[in-house]
Image (cartoon, rainbow, N blue to C red; front, side, top):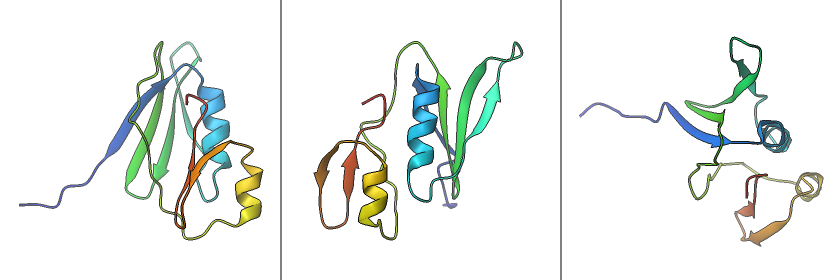
Length: 102
């Protein structure tokens, strides 16, 4: 069998600006590539994370997986505080927080 990989994950949100601000504030997270409709309205944000593309599409309802887990080598405590997000759980290796859509 050939090697499979995830090409992209697409979720929807009504709050693209908030989602962009949140994800770009994560340490090591890439800047969003913005995609626009023909009328100039923001349609989606694309974040290239290694081999996988995270696409956040503008939608009337939010549709997303329960969680995304990203690998980071090490977060400094000062970087975590800069996120200004409520941390709802921590382990030795993981910091759990909500994005703007909860």
